[in-house]
Image 1 (tube, rainbow, N blue to C red):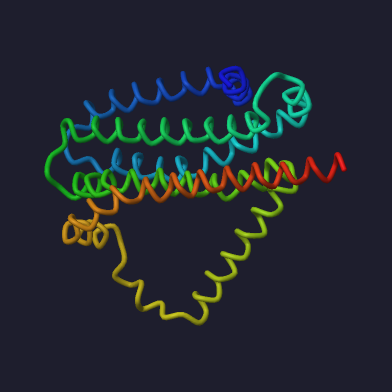
Image 2: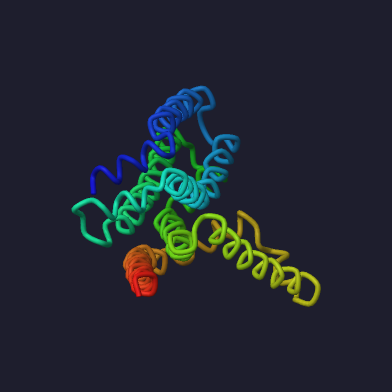
Length: 240
C-alpha cells in the first residue's frame, strides 16, 4: 500500500508541489509582517485559496489515474500479492490525505493572518471563513467521493465526461434560476452578510463542524465500497 501511495505522490510531481506550498507559506508569512493589521489584500488571498482547495484534489485525481492508464499500472498491481481492493483503496487514501493537507495549510495561513490582525472587516471575514474550513474540506472530500467511482471504473476520459455532464446539468439549473427565480432574494447576500450570519449562529456552526466530518467520511467510505463492488462485478463479467 505504501508503494502505491508513493507512486501517486510521484505521479503528481509531489516533491515540486510540496516545495511550492512551503515557498507560498514563507511568502505569505513575510507579507503578513509587511502588511500588518486588518489588510484586505491578504484576506482576499486566503479566500481565493479556498476554491483551489476544493478543486485541486479533483485535478490530481485525474492526473494520477491518467498516469496509471498510460503505464498500465492496474494490470501490474493485479499481479502483486496485494488485496484485490488495494489499488482502489490507495486512490481513496491518497486523495483523503491530499484534502487534509490542503486545508491544514489553509488553516496555518489563517493562523499567520490572525497573529497580527486587528479587529476589523478583514479579520472578521477570516474568522468566519476559518470556522468553515471543516465544511470546505468535507465538500472537497464529497466531490472526490462522487468522481472517484467514475474515473476508476470508466477511466479518466469517460469519467471526466460524466463529471462534465453533471456540472452542465447543475449549470443549467443555475441558468433557469437566473431567468425565472427570485433574484431579489440575493441582493443582501455578500461577505458582510456571511460574517453577520456566522456571528448570529455560532452554536449551529459548532454543531455543524462536529457532525460534518462524520457525514463526509461516511459518504467517502460508501463511495469506496460502491467502487469496489462495481469493479468486482466487472471482473466477474470479464472473466466469465
